[in-house]
Image: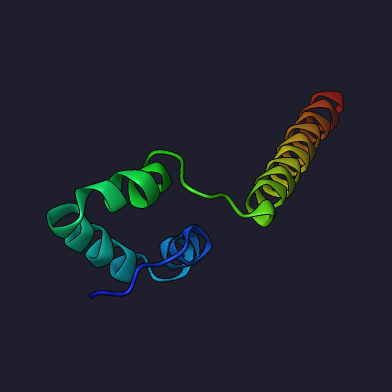
Amino acid sequence: MEQRFTKEELEEYYKNSRQYFDNLAKYYLEMDKDYYNEFIAPIYNNPPVTPDEGVYTRHLTLIVGIATALIVLGSLLVMILSLKR
């Protein structure tokens, strides 16, 4: 493994091929500690986040919140209607 990877390539491997990235990290940790500290360790310490991950979380939170509100309102409606009878 004489080839050195750019920061962007390493981030892509981290996101898309984690096992390959981990193997690279192990190799460079043993063979070239300076390269590891400069390029690989920062990715482990502050992993790259894709923009879609935040959007997905917000959408999921909104959907779960709306579903919970509908269930609570439906339950209250059933209780009120059953008390009137």
